[in-house]
Image (cartoon, rainbow, N blue to C red; front, side, top):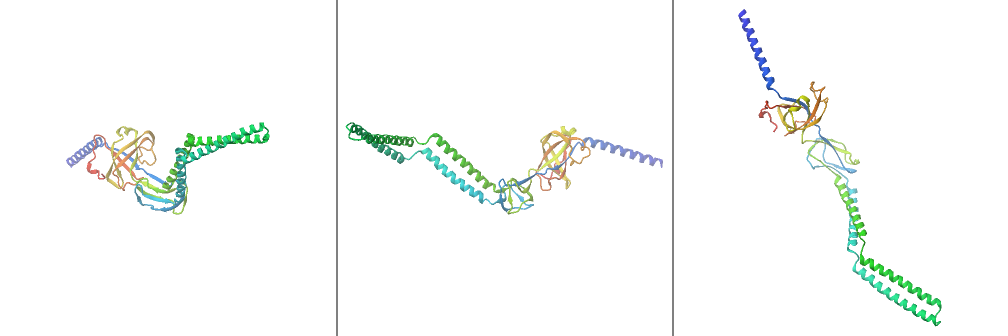
Length: 339
């Protein structure tokens, strides 16, 4: 009986020793860094940049959309009227600038020259009449009043001739450079207004900025919206980011570009592959969403992990586990099924 007891004791001690050696061996070999985090929530509130009446909604909650899909439209009639109005102004100002740059028509200049010749003849005739009046006045053939009237007519003819010559000079010289510059500036201002009016017409169409899923539909057709009012909330699908936190002693084991494996509760044996894309340069207190007791009272560094080839099983806000093996650890390639 004693021999059996001794044999059993020896066997138990041997097994205990082997168990301790195995535990010590595996504790040395299993040097995998384990982190905890959540899939980042990436949403965008979509609305129009212009105000107006909501005319049509093309999608509803839960619908998948692609980049560029038209989600909703406003009644664009007021903006189209504005485009037509500004287009007419642009045409008018463009013709005015063309007139300033081309100058006056040859017919107008010829007409002005004819007027100058006409008034030159009138002025010469008035000058001759004035000379005859002075000679006649000396022999008492006319009164002083008649002579004064002849002088007045001569000065009026000279003044009209000077005015005609000045007008001809203006027509021949064309418009001033300042007039051309003003006409050009007016045209540029109108063209800028036209571009803005066309942009408002474009902004009356709401398109998806990226692929995703419609989470909420906040408005209905017929609603009068102000610029910026939320119409849809879009959940972005790509890229998928994981937000995690690393304790300071483990900070030296990771760097941007490090490969990691991401496990969710629904696929514990089928990890996703990922890559560390960002490590915060500033320490912070562990957020409440981190579930490890060890880290809750410690300072940690936030990091972002980009998931490679994600699928719909990774939902936003989902808690995940991240494993990073050091240079002595290797994860079998057969585990990575989400490639």
